[in-house]
Image (cartoon, rainbow, N blue to C red; front, side, top):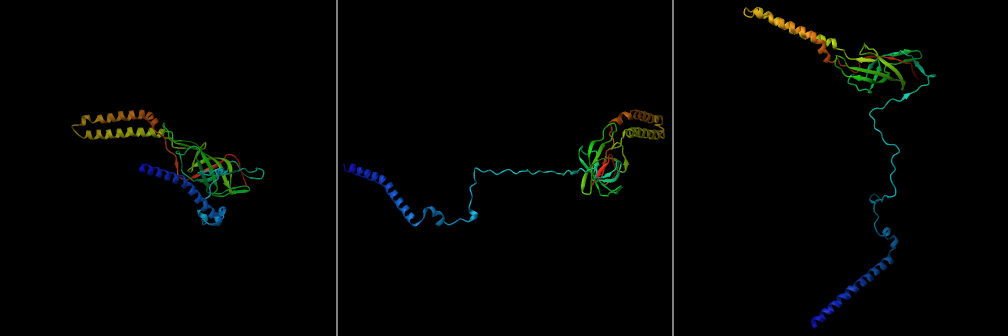
Amino acid sequence: MNNILKYKIIIIIQVVLLTGLPAFSLELDMSVDEEIKKKYNTSQLENDVLPQLPEKLKTSTPNSNTTQAPPKTLPTFTNTTAPVITKPDKKNAIKISKWTKFQVKSNQLISDWSKEGSSISFTTTSPVYKKNITIPSGTILMGEVIDTHRPQITGNGGLIVLKVTSITYNGKTYSTEAKITKANSKKIFFNKIKGERRYWKNVAEQVDKGEKFYNKTKNISSKMADNPILIILSPVPTVVGIAGYTLTTATAPVFAIFDKGGNISIPAGKPFEIKLLESTYVY
């Protein structure tokens, strides 16, 4: 019975402690809070008591309702800048008459590897004197490749067709229409720079091969004629050589079809001639 009574007493004590402790804690907390309110202004507690953080360490919270506006213009990236064409008033402009010729040099390699639409430029090497105007040496003329192809079979050479479209004078660029009349000091026609057409040259090369073969067989026949044993057979190589030469000559026009023509490759700095197809107006 004593043990049962002890257990009951222990349980009652635990219940009292468990129910009374929160109340005690609450009273303690409230008393502490009252003491703080007497000594400090709790609305200014953070500013008056806590040390101030340096401005660099303060962080601001972004407003979730605001968004960064996109830039008004997006950046563009270009490799080359096209010249700005000035349109002069013909009444007040100076006229460079049709058929005016410019002696120029190329500013880049010109070849049949050039792509259609690629830009070209030339620099004048001597001044051009006209009424009311002098176009000085060093003037830039620009244009583009309008047609091109590599050497072709049948002995056809490469091709490149150029078109001059603008001239820069007195710091401004004006549209013009001109063609190439000389390339690398050689006259060209219809504005076409063409590689060497080699069909007949290829035919001649085939014939030369037959002739060389014939000469070799003739030499063999001559050596055999000096030998008493082989003298009877000495005409045979010559006969074979004649047959080979005849066959090669007859088939040369056919085989020459499968050979290509010459390339176009004009280094930078070579002389050209440009002629205006229409009058050009500048300031």
